[in-house]
Length: 394
Ligand code: MCU
Image 1 (cartoon, rainbow, N blue to C red):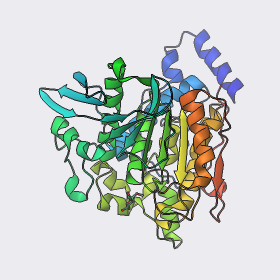
Image 2: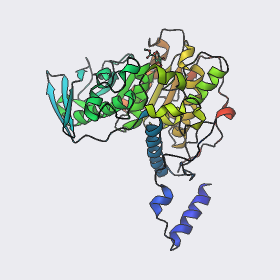
Image 3: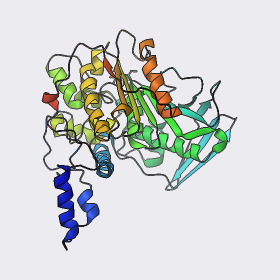
Image 4: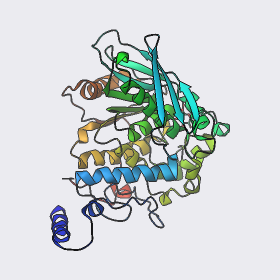
């Protein structure tokens, strides 16, 4: 296939045809593939207009297309960098951030807990509501109050929070996109504040449950994040809508797209038309995980709760890992799904795997992150969900 493609390239390059090379490698972004209807998990390795992805450089364009498509149909539009951002470092531990756009300003102030050990500038986790993983004693933790950026109580939270004060209550972004935008602003602020002694090249993001869904979205949208650790994010995070729908249809009490849009405001209202038939959605969450590639991603799930879509997260993340595989970095993504513990309690049996991910992506150590484990009693039937091959992108 790669050879055929190179021959095609040579043909076009050698001819006087008015086909530009960038367009051939990276077609114009098409966020509305016509009459999309596919019960298989959408192919990561084909652009929405049908051109195959065969090169690593093309993946960058395809990732951009996936990002724009998932924003348009599911998560809502992520605004670009604001017109201005000012930051003051106060009390020796707080970033006082003021963002101004189109004559409106908001202010928020994440605080940093410095580690007892380690050396500055410190690697750090940006932790949604503090997160729920055990942090090593040489990593800083930046507390992110995501609820003040976009509220997440129930349907009445739509358009409520500082993000919406800035961009208007009718902004298309769901809460998760609003949070991801704010995480990017925290990173902007860190970049401008060397006295905060945080290593901006060694940042992780984490959160549990609803905040785990959010952490995955932040990791997908900002390539400055070195390590993304969504914990027990379940449906709306590490699960795929299609697999969760099938689980419900086959008798499991699992959260689906149809349910989730009624429960809370994590998604854009643009998602509503898809939730009764998720086959019509041109994306699914294996692609959301794929957006994190080639950076580090460690997905932690819990088999104790059907509602989290245990089988769905298993199949979805195994499928998302194929993007990392295609890029030659399968080990940069791990999946660990262990039960017998309460929601958001971190089991000791996952500690070694977590440490290996942190050591590799925040400390450049050469650890073993080839981790795909589950204590769930099910197998992932690839033939039911995947009808495309995984290329070796060159
Ligand atoms: C796993 O995340 C959510 C889940 O999607 C909701 O249905 C449930 O109400 O709350 C979970 C959660 O955030 O628990 C803290």
